[in-house]
Image 1 (cartoon, rainbow over the protein chains, first blue to last red):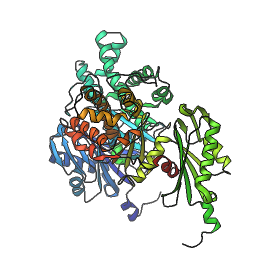
Image 2 (image 1 turned 90 degrees about the vertical axis):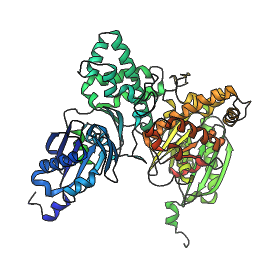
Image 3 (image 1 turned 30 degrees about the vertical axis):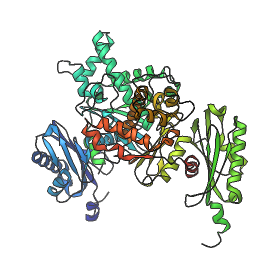
Image 4 (image 1 turned 180 degrees about the horizontal axis):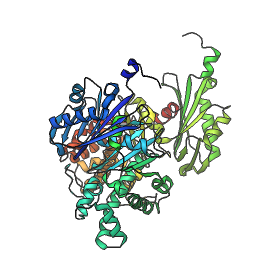
Length: 310
Length: 310
């Protein structure tokens, strides 16, 4: 390619994606081909003003000399997002009540278009870009086993938000027979048992990641580990049947902090599905276990996906 | 408009839709505007040969002088459908094991394109055409409380089949705490409690429709009716939360035989949702009860939808 013309430059060949987390904010510069050209991260500071300031600075840093060539900025954030308005509210971990995140950041960056997405939706887009076989036509569900449990749903490459932005909020379907109280006010929400945070609560492992420890001890037939893993994997089976039978997706990507458990996590999920399939030809015919994939844990899928959402 | 040219005629201005049921087969002729121009029905006869013969004859009858102008024929049928191949299998009520329904009917009609759809999917398309506010952009879920329980999912006017044709098969998600045995081999499937057939089994009403009788007696505080309605409405609440939170649809159309119960059925569902919302601001914010609509029970939505699927 020769020197880009001024006009081409303003059509924008680069995008920046920002992933706001509870402890860090990460940004990537994504080129026209959808590849990560640069990345940078800073510790997260609490408060709306700090978040706007840090995100803006991070965009400038990661864009570098390409700042003038940005087609737009995408931001993935926890909390309740209104993508139309670019606002986010109830970001408890960062002390944000309500924030016009998109407009505030856009104004500081000279009017660049800014797209704000729910963090799980952004991660879904990023993961679907990187997981083999997840790009292109058909439905892909990204199941995020993080602090909470929620799904991002992509149909033919397009993120599905639903009528009120709640598409994929399967974590608060109250069907777990243990009926633990959920902070949402219901009892027995899936999220009370099989989110990353819930497993950490059900199986405190001295600050170490709970799930690998739980699986290892259950494999050694330690009785309480077998019991707790039974509770967790049952709820995982319910979550997989719900997204599997509602959406019948081509690929189900397992993400969130719990994905760091790696293949043993997929084995637990597959075993639960096989157990359920044993007596049910219909479920067996769906081969849901074959559709499971791990989200890449060593790549900035949240920030990448936020950029792709632009 | 003047006299259509021969060419225009062969592009096809009419479509025929056929709805195969356990007791009757119904066909409609649909004009270019999507309106029903003619309809006809015959009793269903068992056996693959009879079904092919009856469907073919019905298409000829309902198309009449427009037979040469058909753009295609759509057929909605119970059983397991492969829309790509035009085949259907396991139609238990009609003694059909496997049948190349599309190719067989198409051949008898001189090579007209024939589209075969699952009956619930066809009804979803037909209902979405007729229910006020359900056409156009966004997601519409049609929840069919019939012999079984299944959903048809329409996104931006397009039926969603999923990877293996199982999208919307929520009836066999096993989460009902009663854990009744399901013919599918699992226990506690939603379908074991809140399908039309299940309610009829849980509340035998001397051959009369069970749901209106059950609701009426529960309103009169007849103890066993209150208990059974509690079981049924709890499963309905689960089904509504599953489709409501997975898809976040703009409209949820309640169809199937149970829709003949009318407004009292929507009241039962709404009350169950209100009960669940009482302690949960998240669920309350979704206003799922406002999204409920009854499918029209006096119109051939299955046959109309089959035509629209062409």
